[in-house]
Image (tube, rainbow, N blue to C red; front, side, top):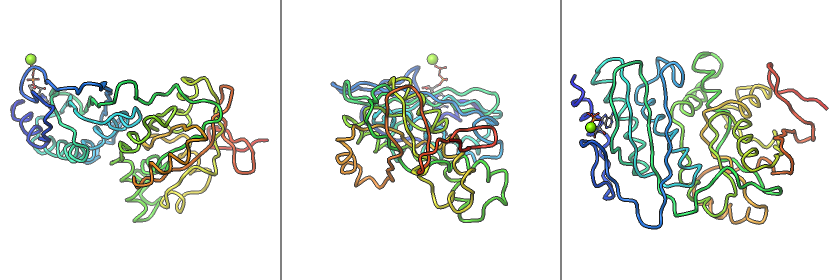
Length: 320
Ligand code: ADP
Ligand code: MG
């Protein structure tokens, strides 16, 4: 199949029209209109076969996830997704593969009114690099650096499901249906928390999406903000699928250190917590307070009895 036919196949499956796209796929560059008073938030993420998804992953899931991880970055900035481009590297010019990839990407793009406005197509091991652009009112983007001592630390959704999904992907007997399917869906089709990110504008003092694992990502916020954190391990939200199928040490390890959940972790001043709940009430997204911002530099995890928890090679361990 010729390159232009593949591009046409993608364009037809992602034809979401926005009236701010002056020039989409087909010229040397796309042209979009940025409304006055807004800034562009721009993010890029790559998924590579064998690194970010297994060789036997479904193409539609790969397409979905390639856009989802990027929309999650925009969500963490409080930006409204608008446009995307796709740099696609393909092992062979397969119509079926490209159609399935584009279907998965296009499905999520449509949900968020994102227009695919360009890209690149090359030969090589399967990989997808998506760039997204989102709109945010001037000066309103959420950043990692604004957390202050006394702020409350929140997380959306549940944690550890994607890591559990990766485990059950290779250990089919580890967990029965329908929990297995739930965990695999969380791994393959993450939900970017776009509406929550928008609702956090002017409210969250710092925000990040949980892509590398909660503790690693909170450490980024702590460093950027010049603060420490106290996280209550017993407060970490777990899905029923995770809680009912895995013991506490395993679950905790995944909740604290597993990646790929694409939830938002953010801080809100204690006096604004009521407003937070009011704003998020209609969004149908679980919200959990998991701790607080403290002075210092360290992100410390403790359990309900106050014992500090630390990670070693075997998992999470208690010590006094
Ligand atoms: P050029 O050679 O000028 O860089 P290409 O032939 O690579 O242009 O691409 C032609 C048009 O198709 C451009 O508008 C480009 O943005 C778009 N395009 C190429 N590959 C993709 C893709 N995988 N997804 C979406 N648009 C693409
Ligand atoms: Mg050109």
